[in-house]
Every structure is written in C-alpha cells, then in structure tokens.
Image 1 (tube, helix red, strand yellow):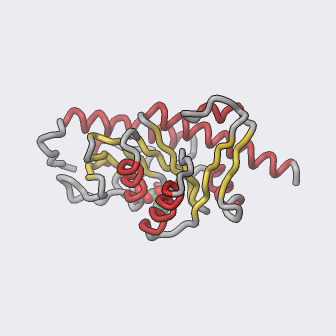
Image 2 (cartoon, rainbow, N blue to C red):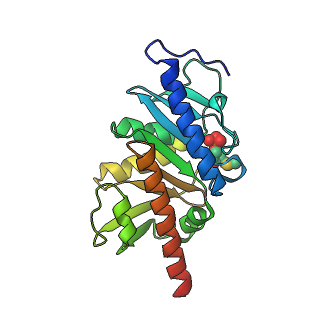
Length: 215
Ligand SMILES: CSCCC(=O)C(=O)COP(=O)(O)O
Ligand SMILES: [Zn+2]
C-alpha cells in the first residue's frame, strides 16, 4: 500500500519500525498468541506519530504493506488504510507516557482465560513471584504488581476512560487485561515490551495453575 510519509519521517525510519513490528508479530503468532487475525502492534516513530498494524490482517504474516502511519490521535497519515480497531488504546499510551516506544496487544489462551477468571475482582494481584522483576521498576519478589481487568466493549473511548481513571488515581500501570479479550502491555522499546508481555503471560499462567490446584 503506498504511503505518503510526512517530510519529517524518513522512509527508512518508517521501514525500520514496520520491520520490527512484523518480526515481533511473527514470533508472537508462532506462540499462538494472535489467533484468527486478532492482536495489534505499534511502535512510536516520533513525538507525534506511530506505526501500527492495519485492521484485520493476519498478524503472523505481516509485511511492510500491513503497517501504516498514524498520528497520536489515531488518524491515518498519508494512507487511506484503516488502522487497528483498537488504535485508541495504543495512542492513549503514547500520549500519556512519552517514554513509551512500543505497545503490544495479544489474545493468548492464558491471557483470555485469566481475563475472565479475574474480571469479577477487577484486578490480578501478583505477589511473591521472582518474575515480577522482569517488569521495569520491580526489584524484588516482595512487591505487589496489580494488573487491572477492564470490561470489554467495542467502544474504545469507554475503555480509554477506564485506563485514564486508573492512571488519574495515581495507580501504577504496566499492562492491563480486557475481560474475555486479551492483554495490553508496553515498553520503552521492543525488547522491553516483549519482556513485559512474556513475563505477564508466564505469571498469569502461574496464577491460573494455582487457582486450579487449590480448587
Ligand atoms: C478477530 S479479533 C477481533 C478484534 C481484536 O480484538 C483484535 O485484536 C484485532 O483487531 P484489529 O482491528 O487490530 O485487526
Ligand atoms: Zn484485541
């Protein structure tokens, strides 16, 4: 799909972001975390723009043509393509957290089941796990890491409002689950975002096992 990039963004820079998104998406799809075209991925290109997956594409088979440029209000830039239906959740993170460079959203089985199981409590409370230290800022298992579970909706502004309310209450937010849907995680760059996502997948799986074993 031809993209008319703004003069301030070099084609090589957009290509670098698109390639990084496609490579990560391929690896996450191979893990089975992006079934049936689900999931979406983005990378900040500069202070005002991000590269994001086009809606409905098979995330295991992405090429540069499956990734488009948007501004941080979710408007397509230089293309008529339709960005992810969940674009607003990505741009919200970039607007609120200028240091964040990558947002990853996946639909693994573990993430989906955990989102349903913990929806009533509204939060997954992680405590005592060594792998909490994979989340930036956590230096000991003797800490509490809260992952909120927000109700699912097709109306993104409603979800954005819940995220805003959590952040405005001054509560730390490293990722969140959406009930019956999946997880959003992010980081300053791709390695950090991947580390956060992988750690949370592991920790959610452990919590599910614990519930199962202690039932
Ligand atoms: C078929 S999955 C339903 C939509 C979804 O949750 C998702 O993550 C993918 O949506 P997109 O518009 O980004 O392809
Ligand atoms: Zn989704």
